[in-house]
Image 1 (cartoon, rainbow, N blue to C red):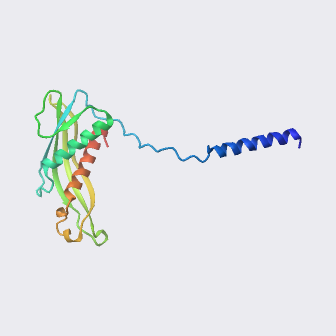
Image 2: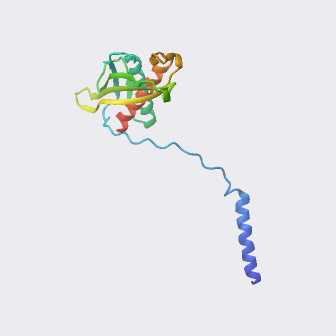
Image 3: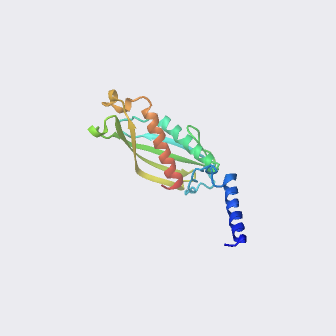
Length: 188
């Protein structure tokens, strides 16, 4: 091997050591960014605010319509802020120009029977229907008899009536509103 070739190899080796010494190969990983939300799929053009109305037609009335309506309005506002949609949802106000009404009806609220394999956990099945309508009567979005299966832990003492578990109804409201708003805005 010639002296010139040895010099080139040593120079290449020194360059590789320099790169490693500077930390180019051992840098911490770049920060991970949350995946982008899919684009909104429903036509909200001309809608500045949405009045949320909830009715509970279930025979059991475990979910409070006023609390669920507020939770859904809050979820719409959160998503609107994240997606820069400039739509505001509210409860208990009269609809005005440019508004739409989101009407949700809870059709049923049931709990799967406990099984030995599911001790301490129950699945709450909520069925609802919803429509978003502009003030001019134009239908923007609708889903009928949509079902949500929500798994929650239940204390052994509340196994006879799991709806009495402290905080359970609030958790069901939150999960139900997140799923409903996601389906409405993103079509899933």
